[in-house]
Image (cartoon, rainbow, N blue to C red):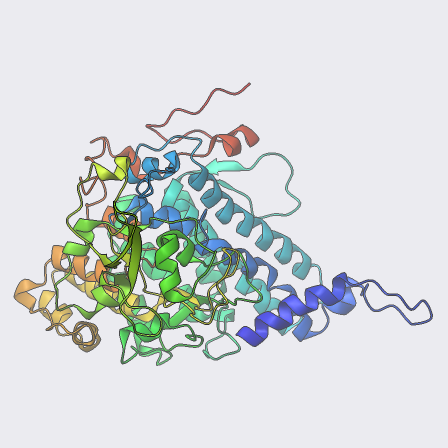
Length: 524
């Protein structure tokens, strides 16, 4: 996929280049109908709506918002007390204002993606029609449904527009109406999607991506609409599992490696490149202090970040769970050459002492969220290993690790949950790949007698940590409004399970009504 990225961005550069030889025939301006008559050009053109996914993992991103709304991570005041950001406190405490910047950027992530899909679908529907054109239209319609599902998950009631030429302001539609439309849109196009998973389809919509989206709709249906659909979730997950297109990796960490393209669990992935996708995926900026970054040969890139694992989330792991140490950096830090890492400080007599860099994951006084954590407080993110070759030298440089938006182990866990919620605990506990997920993590399989919803919730939390599903899971399992580290219990009215519509976007569209429990800023 790195090669495909180079072709996409390289092609953009070619089309942007002006012709300097006036005696040559100009090819930089190709008529649309000619350009889109070539199947390869169609695939290239339809890559544009996918590029909007690149911002999923940057600092002001939807991923950042989600993992900070949950009990997974927090960004306390920086350890030297130099700065803190109110937006991070809003997310941590669920006291979110309608002007919260991360909520706005997440809204824009969804609706910019939807708009890009609308544009591309319009162009393809007015291009010469052939099998390739029709398949790519179907791809884009399902991609658009994915963007809409993200929006409906977070805001519930959203503006709806699927036409580039529609006049007037989009009408706001409620969550049940939108979920029905998303499901129908996926089902109407699923048979036109690629069924063979290969490097060619990596990072693009396939039939299994569509099935994954249906599984999420069915699994969350009782919470979202009041209607349980667990039997349907069970069946669509089984369809993915029986397809033979995916299997669990022998090692958990393989899914997050620097070179993890085309992994056997990657149902839908965002390709990343340190060359072609800058300002995309740079966790090192958010989670490393300036001095800690140097242990990984990362120079001058950090903003002295303090994104840490919340202490009670860290404590929820079984110490024998291999995933804990593969996800979080804690204890004695070793540099990229394997040497014990230290930091220096001046002693009262003016001499320098060197102290072992030992990160303390827990306990941490919740008051320090506001007053400032210590240099060594908090486990840091290492789930996606960092390049240590010196290329990560400024925050705009993306890591090479691809991000799996949809992973096969999630399908297995959704299948188990669907069974469990239908009172089929014995059958759920006996799913072989569920057992394999546990043994891969160094843990014994969960016996049927011990397979409760709480046990499965913890298993999902640890297997899928930081992958963007925890908020949705916490809401579905009834955990989201509870108290956790440096966060009191939410208002019992439950309004925090939806996010506020950003003030700027509400001002843009008079049809939008604010979600209950939030007060928009007055318009001028």
